[in-house]
Image (tube, rainbow, N blue to C red; front, side, top):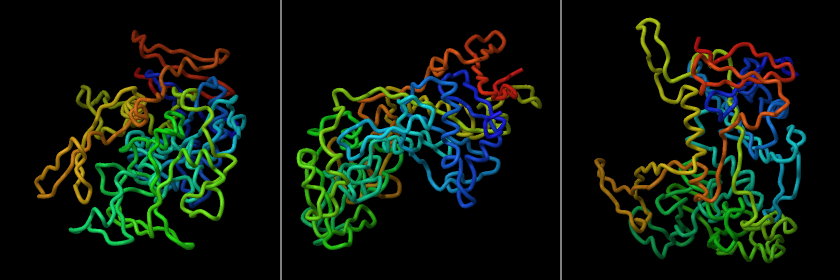
Length: 448
C-alpha cells in the first residue's frame, strides 16, 4: 500500500524505457477535474516522486509523468487538468539566465540532480507536443519581465516558448501591395522562414526546434551565436498587439543584442528603458555559468505512465489473441496502446531524425532559399517544410541528447525486486519492484 493508502504498484515493461504506475486511486487523482479542486500535479507530485526515488537511483534530470488517455470515457484530460503540460522547477544551478539559484530536490526524494518535474495530461502528447516546450521551462523564460514564462511578441527567435524569428520581420517598406500589405505602425513576422505567423507562448508543439536564444539558455551555444533581437515597442502603459497572419501593431521596432545585455545588465533593469525588453534581474543576468563548453549536454529522463487496471487490460498491446476467430488481431487506432506510447517516447529520445516534411500555405512570407512554391489542387500556393516533428536531439540541432532507456540499470542495488522471465523468451523480462509495502496485485504483461 502507498503511504496515502492507495493500492499502487510499479512496473518496468520489457522495453526497459519507462515505468508504469498502476493504481485506480492514483489515476483518478491525476485525471481529476481542476474545477473540483487541486489535482495530482498540485497535491501528489512530491509523494509520487519520493516513491519513485525509493526505487531508482538519483540519475535523472527530468521526471516526466503522463496520464494514460481513456478512449472509452473520451474525457478531455487536458481540459480537466487546466493545461496541456506543466513544469515544476525543482533545481537551478545556472548563473546568468535571469534566475536565482535554488534547490528543492530533497522535497522530491532526489539527492541533488533532478531539475524538473513535468506532467503531460495525455500520453499521446509525446510526439505532438508540448514535450519540447515543457522541457524548455527548465531554463526559461526567467530573462525578460515582459511575458511570464514565455517570449510573447518579442523577436528573440521563434522557438518553443513563442516569439518570432527576427529575420522574418516585414515592414511597410517591403510588403507594399496585396492582401497582406503593411502601413506605418504595422509589421508582420513568423516563427520560422517557412511560416506566416507565430505564437506568443508557443509555436506549434514539437513542430519547431529550439531557437538560438533558447539554445544559449540551455548551455548549448555561445551568446555570440544568438542573432540580435527585434522587439516591437509601444509607448505608454500599453503593449504592442498581435493579429492574424503574424500582424503586429507597434510604434516601432528596436534591435538589441544578447551580448550587450549580458555585458551591461544594469542598463536593462531600470525604468528608463522600454518595458518590452526590461530584464527581470540585473544581479541574476550575465555570462552563463556553466558556459556552453562545460554545461551538461547529455540528459536523462525518467518517463512515467500513470494508469489503472482497466486501461492496462484494454490497451496493453497493438495486437491481441482474438478468441472468437482464434487468430491474432489488431486494436483499432494507432495511438491507443502501450506499444504506441513506447514507440513515441523511443522516437523522441533518438539521436537522429526522420525529417517528416509537410506543406504550409504561402501567404506573405518569401519563399526560402532552396525551396519552391507549388500550386496544389485547391489553387493555392504552398511551401514544403523539410521537418514538422522534432525530437529532442533534432530540436537542439544535434547538440544535446536525451536518454530514457536502460531503466533497470538505475534500480537501487539494495531494492527487494522480482525478475520474472515469461516462458522461454529471455528478452521479455518484467522488472517489478516491491518497496515500502507496494502491493504487486498482478502482472499486467502476463500473457499466460
